[in-house]
Every structure is written in C-alpha cells, then in structure tokens.
Length: 351
Image (cartoon, rainbow, N blue to C red; front, side, top):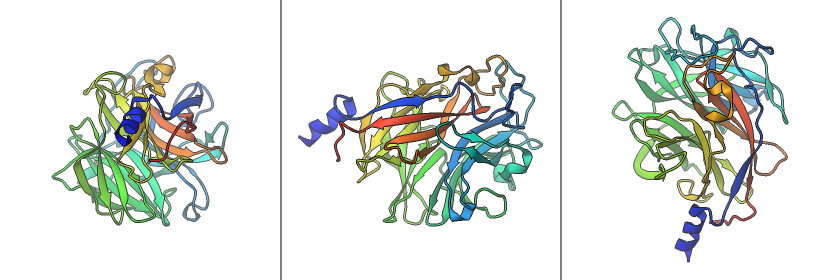
C-alpha cells in the first residue's frame, strides 16, 4: 500500500543512500598561521553559494559572514559582534573549480553588505541565497543592539558587489521570529521556504507567490527531531533543496543532539518533487560531524568562537556528475569547510 511504501522509505529499509566522496583536511577559507592565507578576517563562516549569472558577469563564489575579534588561536572563545566591529557579509570569488575548489583571499574590500539600521546595528548573519528569474533572494539574520535576531530578506541583481542590494525588512513581521529560512523557488510560482522558528526545534514551511511576501504555516511540519541520535535535539534546513535525477529533492540539514545544544552534525532527507514539504526518505547517520576535523573546536593553530559548531548553509550541484553536490559549511564559528556528497537514487521511487 502507499502507506506501507512511505513507511519503508522513512525507515531506510528501502530508498536512498548518500556518501561523503571528498572531505579536505583543511578549511577552504580561514585565518591561520599557515599559508595560504585565505582570509584577513579572524572569523569567516556561514557560507552560501552564489551561482553565476549574467548579473554577476558569469562569476560565482561564496557570500560569507565575516567579523574581527581578538580570539586567540588554539582555544575556543565566544566572540560576539559589536557596534565597532559588527558582522558583515562579504563575497569571495571562486578561483578554481572541481575537484578541489579554491577561493581568492578574502579582504575588507570584499564586503558587500553591512548594518545600516537599528534592526541590524550589530550586523548580519547566516545568509542563504537563491537565484530566480534574474534576481538573487537572500534571507539572513539581522542582529540588533541587544543581540536579538530577526529573519530578514534582501534582493540583488548582482550580489558580488555592494551597489545593488535592496533590504526588504523582516520576512514574517515583528510579531513572529525565525532563525533561518531556506528558499526553494518554483517555476510555477508556488515558492516554498523551509523555516527554523525561534524556540522551535522543527523545520516548518512558509509559502509565497512572489518571493517577497511570505506566509508562515507553523503547523506544516517538514522535519522534526527524532527520539534519539544525532538529530534528536533540533533540526534546521541548510541550503535550498537541490533536485535529484529522479525528480525529487535532496535536503541537507543541520542538527543538534540536544535541544539547547550547538548544531554540530549535517544530515540529509529526500523531499517529494511534487510537494517539497513531504519527506520521502531520511538518512539515519550524519554525513559530517564536528568531531571530524580539529578546526571545529579550536585545535592547535586554529581560532574558534563556537565550540563544536558545524553549520551547513551553502550547496550546488556539481556539473556533469549526476546526484553529486558541493556543500559549504561554517565550522567553529570561524572557518569555511567543504565536502562533496553523492546521493544514490538507484533504489528510489518517484512519489
């Protein structure tokens, strides 16, 4: 029956699998003593991938949260943004592609967006960007003077520079808050956002017909924590879901073992191509975890502002490889790491 098939898919008894195909031992962007010096900022994390377009002059790269502080190497020390040194968003050009992407050095001249109102006086964080019909849409967290955050939206025809950004304000209004929003545009105009709500451990859905005005359906649960395991505490969507060769979507998501714990694992689920708020399959083990690399926790020679943090915000399908994806994540609140993940759809079904 259809109900039994759905249960089998969710249980992992029949369905998809995924593997990490390449995981560099070093971050691709970060502030370390050893060359190559890939960032002049002490903290560079929260990466989101910017796909090339005519608006960018066919350049691609990453938008990255950047900030300076006095965090020492070799230990983990919280480093909150200040009015004098807020968090900003910078664009870094990709210098070489697969199989080992590299990036030009990140400097102050690469900053494209920063605070300009009371809502974001301490800066901007956690960007996620998508491209649709000539415009880039970016959700991000605005940080006010108290440190409180609000999910906001900005648009640009060219996010690689500072000149063309339009901040549209709060996504859901001041009465509601959220900690992240991952947009999946639709050619038919039925756009979906996967939302992590403030104080909510689940991923819920929002909808829009124009990508500007959004309605949050807090009762529409897409993914919630499991009773045990790496994602038993809370879950949060990573980059925009990406299409598989069978027409369904893969969602890479961030997870914490405890509700109040730091996001330190990345898992995956498969969403229906017909209804991306419906989960067809969910992996049982994390793809990557904080314990995999020393630069997530202030190992020797590395700065760290968030102990054991691994947070995936960026991703892109790898050209000419079916169901292969280049993913970008922040680590330790200080670095940008990358992995290649391949999804096996050979045992999948179209639902």
